[in-house]
Length: 213
Ligand code: ATP
Image (cartoon, rainbow, N blue to C red):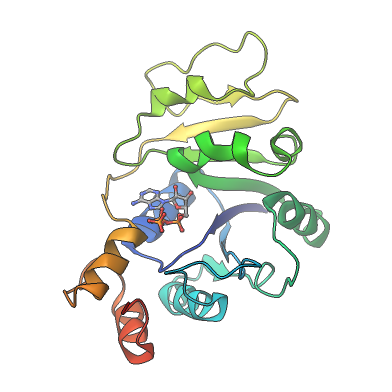
């Protein structure tokens, strides 16, 4: 089984995430796609909804798609949560599956700042999606490319080899310039977030009074 892993804070999940996931699933012929909302950080961060709320919103957003599901693997962790730990656990849980870690170009370029990046890039293959403001050709700035790896040609998706032998493919997806930051700001300003998030998410935010200030 080809399983996509889509991690994020999902604070809250929005149509930029969902449409990206759908296009990745189709283009990369994934059998299923697992959304993994991050848990609560040890120190409370302003504006970050509780992990239980973020998980509940993802669950509502994906329940109508039979290929999508949500995992509580990071939610239940009490210690600091790292992507490396999550991927090691998932490899154990799904030993037969091919795992693909999906992330936006902004997040991909940030990997060098994550915990144990050189280990992380050896654990799974990557699917990197374009995001407004980030050019797929920015991939050449990634410091862990295989020695001598050619820069990605203009015709994506063509995989780049990472140090250690795993690959990263780069996908143009429908550019939806939506961010969770912008949604939180709209809620704070008491403005509409309709058509930026699924109705069930909008309703959840309203009924739980999230992001009000
Ligand atoms: P915030 O604005 O709070 O930083 P965000 O909208 O970037 O949040 P995250 O939960 O941090 O959302 O993102 C999870 C993953 O989804 C990341 O890999 C990010 O690059 C990707 N992503 C988020 N929004 C989009 C979008 N509109 N199009 C494509 N990818 C996206």
